[in-house]
Image 1 (cartoon, rainbow, N blue to C red):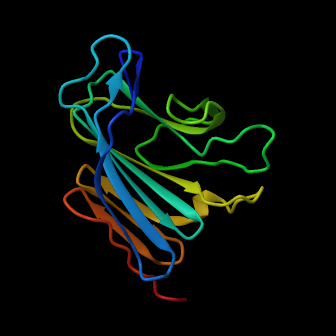
Image 2 (cartoon, rainbow, N blue to C red):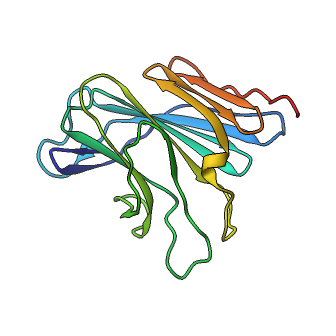
Length: 186
């Protein structure tokens, strides 16, 4: 998160829950934190970031809900950081709430200091904003196209529902846990 051009770091992470399916390839974890700024005032009153990660098959769904962010703030999200000498390829695909942002960005403090794909969003107001992205969970040099993994993503300030290409659905509401419903085989 960036406010007035000042980048934040994530210090204390508060767990919100975690769970998994009955052996059919999915799991989730959720947490929240208050961004801390190294320069200037250390915190923005009321600013909170809730994060939910859902691992499903070869994909990782990443949901970030920003609450109380000032109008002049931006959020940047990076994919898995990989070095130039590694065969692992990192990718990130914005599904909802992200501005068009082609290219690579340096991962922020607290992660590996290397370049990777990224998404960026302008905050634009005090209402909660939800940003949803998708990353591959594959060490292969040519991961399946991320744009084809999800057929629908509906999101608002109260939650997210993703429909995967195979028909499975993953709903999350800010008031509860993540669910996952199998698709109907074709």
